[in-house]
Amino acid sequence: MGIVIFDGVAYGMLLFLIGVGLSITMGLMNFVNLAHGSFAMVGGYAASVLMNRWGLGFGLSLAAAFVAAALVGAVLEFVFYRRLYRAHPLDQVLLSIGVVFVSMAAFTYFFGPTMQPFTLPPALDGQVALLGLEVGRYRLFLIVCGVAVLAALLLGLGKTRYGAMVRAAVDNQRVAGGTGIHVQRLFFLTFSLGCGLAGLGGALSLGMLGLEPSFPLKYLVYFLMVVCVGGAGTVTGPFIAALLVGIVDVAGKYYLPEAGAFLIYVFMIAMLLVRPNGIVAKKGIA
Image 1 (tube, rainbow, N blue to C red):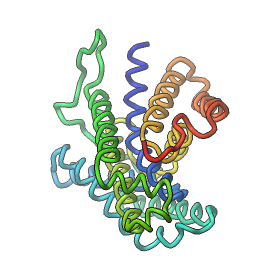
Image 2 (image 1 turned 135 degrees about the horizontal axis):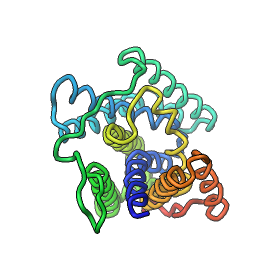
Image 3 (image 1 turned 45 degrees about the horizontal axis):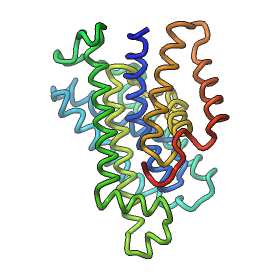
Image 4 (image 1 turned 90 degrees about the vertical axis):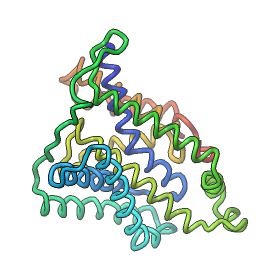
């Protein structure tokens, strides 16, 4: 049971790393961005190419994945997304789902339809004893990364000037603009940050989920589940939701493999019935 919970927590941390950026951008911009998984795929492929073809180290590849996804997100925000911030949600969905299919076709053309190869660095390979359990080093690394990102986001959004501006814009964009905050620039930076976090999660998923061109569509429902169950516009909400989703999904597949992914959808429906506004209702970014 202990190892199932541990693996579920590690899986949940990966979902949190990818989904938290979507939560922040949805909470700030009210933009329905179904293409968030595409930015995770950008980061994953960037890390894969740098490690497999250029021989770059794992740590530097993770940093490059964050930068690559953030840059792609910045370009798309400037060219496409900002034109639809005040548009009907259906227009936003059509744009973002179009980005998903274009990205899938592009990565299939350039890299082929097969899963990207990945070899764990020696320091993260194998197992280590923890509280009487033999746990995977890489999964433990994922948990550490998730906790570190959570702490950095809470500190950055709660203790910095940028975080204060984000919280002000979440509460009331018009008032925030009237106080001198450049809301459009704030959108741009926050969207890029969210995409960068997705890219980091995509790179980390190489060692657990695998990476192929269908990645953005294959895991889309999980990212949305984390945000909807946790509460869009929050950080702690998706963190808690990702842990619950990860544990329920892994436990369901371990103890009831014949049910497949059915249990996770039952869990999502039950949570939304109990907490329709999410585990943590939005009161600014927290």
